[in-house]
Length: 206
Image (cartoon, rainbow, N blue to C red; front, side):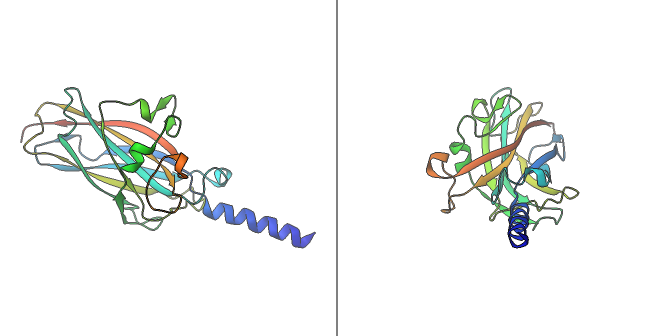
C-alpha cells in the first residue's frame, strides 16, 4: 500500500510540474499616442493559474496574437514586428518568440473563446501570432509573473494623424503534435485561450 501511494503522489507531482495553465492579469500599451515612425510595446502580464488547473492543459508552448484594426479600415498602418517571452526574467525568459501565423488560421470555432466572444467571429483585424520556442510550464508559481512584450510601430509613410487604432491581444497555449507547425486540431494539435482583450493607440502629429 505504501509503495502504491508513493507512485500516486509522484504522478501528481509530475502533472503539477508540467502544467501550462496561465491567466492574463493585464494587457497594456506602453504609449497610447504615437507619432509617425514611433515604436511602442503591447505588454501581456501572465500569471500561473495554480495547481488546481494542472490537469487542464499540460506540456504546451505559449502563444500571443496581436491584431490591428481601425475605424477607417487601415489595419496595416501599425506594424507588429516581434515578441519576447519573459522580459522580466521569469519562466526561462527573456527569449524571442517565433512568428507562428499558422495559429491564426488553425483556430476553429470554440478553440479560442472567452466570455461569449469567439476568436473566429472577429473581423476587420489584421493578426500576427508568436509562440515560444519550447513548452513553458507554469510550475504552479502563482506569485510570479511572465511579461510578454510585442513591438508595435506606427508606419511613418502610412499612419493617419488623428486616427484611433484598435490593438487586440490574445493569449493562449498550443500543444504541438511534434512537427513544429501550427495546424488545425484535426491534424493533432490542440489550442486553448487564456484571454481575448482590446486596447488602442492614437496617431498624432510629430
